[in-house]
Length: 505
Image (cartoon, rainbow, N blue to C red; front, side, top):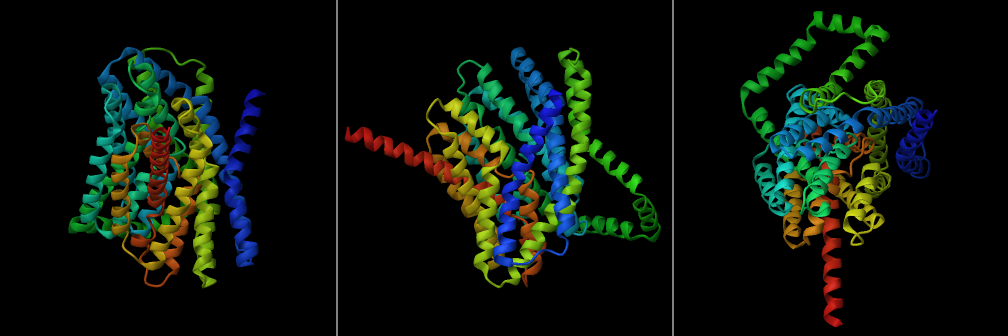
């Protein structure tokens, strides 16, 4: 009975997370566009399936993954073994990102749009390995008590340099891949590990040292994916391999087999569920290996944990089905309809409204804001942080939409944005830096990412002269950069105001 009440609460929570999108889309449809989309019923059903999938997924996390993850983190912190902590951090980061729904969605879109040149599986594995390595590095940073300043400054200098040499086709996708790594699965696991370690190690400040893992997890995939893009788009062998994949898919025998499988609804559902099981399998493997071979303790309430993992798999399946039916079509349809009005102001207004509304309802942001308020002991206000981040996301997506409309190169926007971030990192008070970078990573929710991605692809598809692969991606990157800027500017302003007050008194 308690579990049913908890599930209904999560279902309500998931619906409230989706409600801002429904309100914004509804207002624009009925007051500005003044027409109902042709496929409105499948879209509406898709949205409901997304809500159900997110609720099941969250219930599974609460029952199965989070309790074990928290217990493992506490056990390793007590042991104080650096190698074990680094290995656990790598495995945790890798497993969480491989199963990340938003990354799956973006990688799939990239493979389709690039016509097989970019492999969705290689992209996901590359991002997951990057996050695993950087979480291991972040664990070392916390234990050694290093400030995050130099890690981020050096890292983003490398990001800007790699961006200068990267092909246009990969830049937006690389930044989006970094932005979607920190989401419904990753943020709670990684944030709990960082804050837990900072609390456990003597002399560490939870606000200064506990935060920052999420920010690092956003940065490193941007570098690795751009390097992957340089290789893929520079060497003939990559094109030949991709062409071979396309030819294999187009083979009549393969096509006939695929059609026979797709013809059976039951087999299709079983196949998709098996794919979801494969996606969650790394997390299950990490938990079991560390629980039984390293900690050497039995899992408490094993039946609940198993039920939790099953709910995670079913929830992921429902989420992906809902994406295809609801969120992707809504984003692309809205882009087409708004372009048809031939008034760009409405496109900008829609981008700003979607960015602000969805971010204010983002559960990961609410959780991080509360943790920051507790750790800061009066220095920060959680609600003020949420508003600052929401404004930053809204401004970022609006500027990203302007880039697509204007047809400008993403290189200069991104390089200029991170140049500002690097400068502000020098100027900001130390207590805000790690938090600001983490907030830049939690702004894109499991609902927001697919809609914003679809909006960018829709605009690039329907505006003459735009290349979908070059111009369609990148909005998520802008949604990650500008919250960092807005939060750091706020902290600098507060610091200066306090100094002026002290000087006057």
